[in-house]
Length: 246
Length: 246
DNA sequence: CTATTATTGTCGCATTGTGAGACAATAAGT
DNA sequence: ACTTATTGTCTCACAATGCGACAATAATAG
Image (cartoon, rainbow over all chains, first blue to last red; front, top):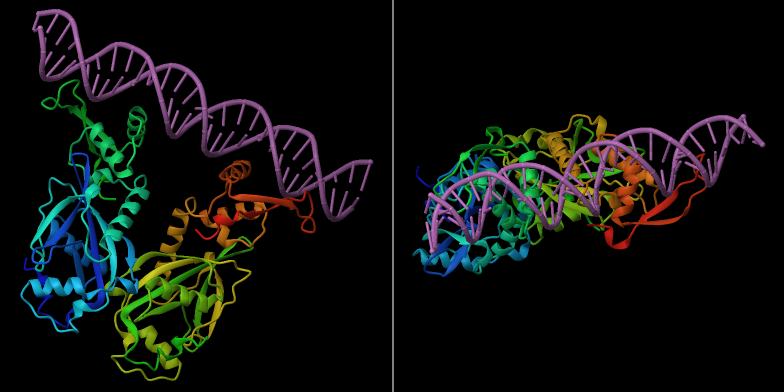
């Protein structure tokens, strides 16, 4: 699939896209007891930022966000949801985008559409770390996972956007089936508990957690696992089919 | 205060406003065991719709929504929060807006900015029914309360927007102090319970509700009331100061 | 092959939260 | 004074939760 974003730089008026509106994606992954998010690196500028996207004239807002998600991860059928709209005037700072365009060898006019004020709709996504294939967009040089607990400074207000996404994730932990989207197909009860502890940032009682998760009736217990670590081999679990993806 | 929206009709290019972005407000009130919302009436067209607003070039998104809220209700210091962005292409239908402009004696050109596609940020507000003074905008003829349980057909996708706002209200009922914004300064425990029952659409056990509310420590009990109905006079309550408004 | 050791699955107990009913207190009307 | 309906509070049963204890078990050490 050809990425239309290849042209957003040369397309100085942003023709074919909604003006002044964008999406910012906080894409969560989970690996080795760490929550991670995908960031884009802009090498000639030293800037780091969230994956972002624009909305085509003839495209639904949510579809635009999902298109961007698929372009960055190679995955389509995963959890993705709006969480907040960032619309303060003080967000507007054309400098980072100008640096990025210049770093790409372009000389953007002062009224380039990407240098104007943008309102951005924040989305957060939950992806299986082992299945995602990070892929930069036309303006970025790399796309890579970063540990949420040791996040470097981000461009614009992206740090605040990440914080708000994390708050939303924590608030929705009980209601939505978050584990089903952040864990691989098969996992142990300990994997699940470590995920919850990492998201909430606090310890959870082991037996109570196990009891509660099993009582929900959304887990399917398989045969035991063997190769892994020392000591008693735990069961493997899988989410029952209807519980994935919402 | 002069209402800038007086000019959005004649201002055919929408100069000074963000293009293609608007706010829609679901303003909840509570009166006589009924949940109500504010609607605008457009007399020459038979149309009904939610109060909406635009965002100035130099204005924060949330401030724009609050400005519109104040213009419609006369109230500023009340609960107001984003709940969803409606950005589907199929929302776009220039017909209702055209009818409204024509009904106002204007002849909008086909490329009038109000007839283009709009993405709208949904906000919901909680107001004290007894304090609000409904006030229409420049395009509407009346602004009035409508019973949520018997809502007439609304223009565009406004019925779906109201439904989504109600879903959000129910989901947030425990976390946010919703009673503090929908009830008058002083109220009885029965008032509070009827509000919760109306929002949730189901009966609540009386003693359990009272026990739980008192345990939250957010209520201040005053002297008894007298004049009201027959039978034992209930206590009056008030929310402790810090609990209002978030 | 046996003992050690750490981890897992499960159970029991104490505490807390919740649903439902009961009762006395009370304020208006008869 | 009596009736009646509503309120504030209590008790009881039951469910949910936090916390510790226990046996089962799988890899490793001797």
